[in-house]
Image 1 (cartoon, rainbow, N blue to C red):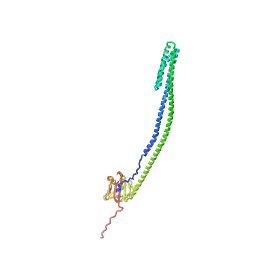
Image 2 (cartoon, rainbow, N blue to C red):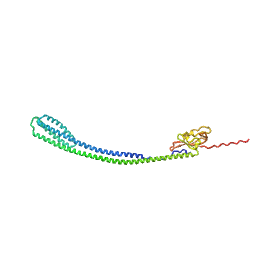
Image 3 (cartoon, rainbow, N blue to C red):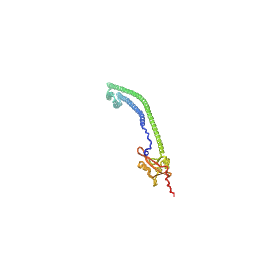
Image 4 (spheres, one colour):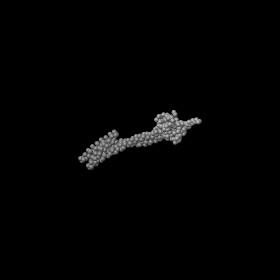
Length: 384
């Protein structure tokens, strides 16, 4: 009965679990991140060029604002000159009112012009020179208006001096405008260059990006396809191993069935719940149950044992197996009551079935009974 306590489980077929899925995931991630990284780098370069372009545009716009403010200042100075001439010729006080209004505006206009050129030291010096000449003109024109208001005769020398001051102011404005226009033209040229550079760089980067993405995507897709094929091969190998394992299981089951069927003793195998899962031919003959009929029936219903003398049923055999967890035998004078009512004097043993960890997977009962019992001899009667 030593074999009865061995496991009836089929041998395990090891299947190696490798890192194909991990490699597949890394390849897929790389196929996505590479193009994204190149796109982000290209976007950063384009942002840099765009920022530089906007700076040039800002400087060009600044030059236009300076020139516009210079033109405003120049118009205000000319306007005061016209008002002075008109008053000197006509004595009309309206020219004085216009002169005073223009004089009030001139201060703010020149202050804004000076603010605009704060970032350019050379232009700031020229602006200060214009402001100084403007102040000289305003003081000179104020004196001429005061003399004319007192009905004094117009002094030709003063008029010529005023024209000289104004000519100097115009010369300074022309020099200031010439420098600012040169700055503007240079900035516009830089703007056009930046536009071309942005166009060329953008086109080049898009081309490089396209080629890089195509190359990397193709490379990564090939690697991805290779990983996918490797994963498929691994799955096929696992399926083949599983099929071999199932075939080995069926082979072992058939071997077990044939072995049990060939044993001359009766053999009954149960599951962990104590219900019949297998019977051989001899156990079918002795119990009167077929293998199909006894399937999943309690062991106590199929293998019914009573005491030959007391005619009392024996205890639950499967419960004894679970309790003692070892090989046990039937008591003496045990009778097996078959399904058809036949009685068999049997000798048996039963043992738990364990797996490699010692867990009870069921039980096996092996029993034997003679095919026919010898009849006792009839004593001879004495002749009388």
